[in-house]
Image (cartoon, rainbow, N blue to C red):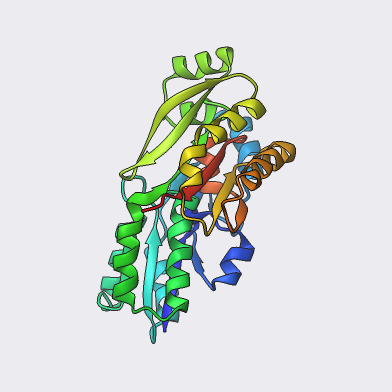
Amino acid sequence: MIKIISDSTCDLSKEIIERYDIEIIPLHVIMGDDEREDGVNVTPDELYKWSDAHKTTPGTSAIAIDKAMEVFDKYKDDEIIAFAISADMSATCNVMRMAAEELGREDKIHVIDSANLSTGVGHLVVEAAIMAGNGLAAEEIVSEIEALKPRVRASFVVDTLVYLQRGGRCSSVAAIAGGILKLHPRIIVENGKMSANKKYRGRLENVILEYTKDMESGLLSAKKDRVFITHSGCDPETVDKVRDYLKGLEHFDEIIETRAGSVISSHCGPGTLGVLYIADK
């Protein structure tokens, strides 16, 4: 058998995790002297409160090698395909590889650097789980996933620059200017790295809808299976409007809403929303 495993930054919902029988290994969130496991004993709302109270963002760290070894060892009779957040953003991928080496199972544990984050990773995880369910061999799945990686389109609109600024991801001047001018950058992931390629101005609800509509041509030519709406705590009415817009395209078989976990939320802050899909060939 083939077991699909991912780190917690894939931001998949409990329903999707259970549907495809995916195992999750948590990254860590560090709030002062308190270290917690993403998705296990800390929520994004708790870290927002902590961050605002301490005027800083929590730290984050890769999965623990002993935890990775423990999870991998549960499936010692299976082949494993394990997904990690981009190696440019975390040491998690290397930790997974070291765990496989420590267990002497490099030939049976296939670690994939997703070159992505959040449900950009999640898309690949679900695709791998479907392939495994269809009986493909591990080597075939890895090859197919490597071909899919450049086609994943992951982007987000950020409500506040404060969290990026606190975490050293933009200058204080940019954070202040963003607040005054109501600028909301669009963050995209390319080749495993994040960059801001556009800035929107105005009320967040309007910005999110404009951002979504800007992707219409890509969405209409996307792989039809699914599209993710992933957010870090947005107004439900705004999320519903995005969903209604995507429904109106009459293109996707499934529109899936997920809530970003604590690691992703600690870097982007509340009010962030992304629409993530796989581009057609």
